Length: 236
Image (cartoon, rainbow, N blue to C red; front, side):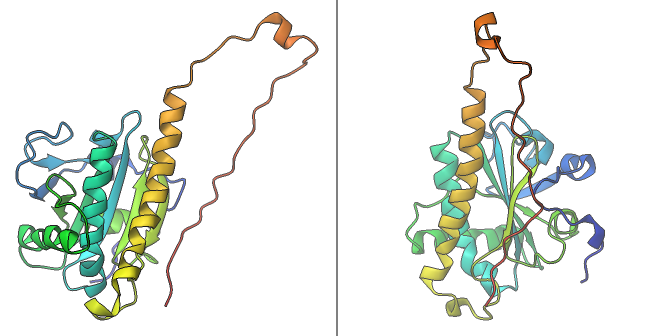
């Protein structure tokens, strides 16, 4: 199937539009989400993750893609660890497409995570079926095939986007453990960068400058940082 909306390519600096953010997605794994305050009736919308200090990570997987299957266990292990370490401030979503039973395929992630040395995932990632290609067409248009990843900040602004380290490998074991585990450092570094910046901002207490502080100063200027629309991709 081809991409339906090539013009909708999102890159760092883009805020997810309201239509994509409010659309409901049924969660197929884990089935028990009653303790997750961001989930209602076992469905999620990304608008529920738009809140101070929150980070959202989304993975784009296809059931027939060996590279994605190789990385999915690593992603699941990362998801559970960071979600727990941040007390639920980071939510991980797996967008799964390609046919077959969604919960059956999601179950593989759990076993693969353990096999790759992670603690067995139980509450993360939240896996949703994207058989309608809604998420793919909204977030993962070319040049982002599967597997690929996106990190959103508290305002649902794209802060990072990349294909995974196994992208381009045709067979599962062609992508070695060391290569697949490269996803851990890549995502952890980017996620924690966004998370820590938001935590630091929320803990900053505004102060009022005194007259003495302002003496001899005609104006107060702030530094502006340009957020270039760039993406990171692996190549073989």
